Each structure stands twice: as structure tokens, then as C-alpha cells.
Image (cartoon, rainbow, N blue to C red; front, top):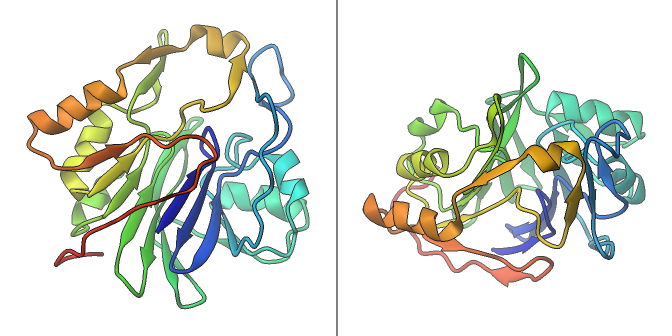
Length: 259
């Protein structure tokens, strides 16, 4: 299994011999509703569009997960698996193969990778977006991805997961509380799933954030503090801090139980 972190929530997962592009923001700036004053993300230079993508996987319909300028640059014939809200975005962009996954539903990519949607982030008052479990069918290795740290209690039913990608550090707003939930929430999911490896997502990478929302954000915790939390709770999980844009191999050990 090979991973490449492409900043923010964007990942290229090479699993089961397939290349899966997750929540891609690779070109242009990132705003919500074109309100630069409220929030704007930019990078010194755009990320190259990865080649030979087998699937685009979208967890949410918001711009930081289903980024229209990036999706417009990608081949509309690439299959997409998406939350119902994200599916609307790519359908409006005339993608030709869109599979919508509700919570608990599965999709199998070329008999190589099984993708199961889990309840994920609460967006707005009552919209719960998707997390995902990706299982490499040949090896049984499983990866769990949830970009805001909202972990469903249904995960407790899963035997083991090998890799978890989720926030490890909190980002909070005054009077609102954590909007990116790491720290104790990441510890909780580590206790449930007993992963071999955890990686942080939703961090900036090679990105500059500006605007009112960013000025109000309060960052709590650090990767080192999270490693200490794991150690104090007798968890052998390794925490890996990837460098943006650099492909790396995850060397995993076979275990008796996998989902």
C-alpha cells in the first residue's frame, strides 16, 4: 500500500493495485461560496494532476472535499464514489460514472478494493456526510478515512483496521467548539479499531490559509502530544507524519482479524 498526501484533505491511495484519489483539491484557491474574506486557501504552486486514476472518492459535498475547479480539470469519465451531497456536485459537472453510497452501503472496484460508507461528519444542522472503510481484498488490509474526526459508534463492531487517516489535532471556534476533532476523538477511534498506523489529515501542508474563519480558529494539541496519548493508553499504533506530495509505502503486518 502506497500513500501520497496532497495537502489538506487530499490523498492519493494506492491500494489493491488501484489508484484512488480522495477529496482532491489540487488547483486554484479554496473558498466557500467565493467568499475570500471569510476563508481562502492557496498554495505557492498547484499540485500536478495524478495520472492513471482508477477512482475518485468524495466524502463530502463542500468545496474542501468536492473542489469544483479541481474536478473540472479531471477526466469526467473517471468513476466516482461519493456521498449523496458530493454526488450532486460531480453530476452537475457531467461525470459519467457516479455511484452514490449511503451509510452502510458498499462498492467494489474491479474485484480489488471494497469501499464501505460509514456515518461521518455533521455538516449544517442535520446532514451527516461519509467516512469510508477501504479493504484491499487480496491482502485483507483495511484503511479508514474520516476527515473531520466524527467517528460513528458503529465502528466498534469492526474487528480491526490497519490504517486510520483522520485529524489528530483539534481546530476549534469560539462559542462553537471543535470543527476539526482530533486529540481525544482520535484516541477513541484508535481504541476501537486498534490500527497499526495513524496519519493526520485536514492539516495545511504546503497551503496558506487566510480570512475571518482562519483568524478565529484555535489549534489545540500536537502530533507529539497525540503520540503520548497513545503510549499512556498502551496502544502500539505508529503515527506517521507524511511530507506533502511525497509518495511513501506503508509496511503493514498480517493480523488474524480484518474487516
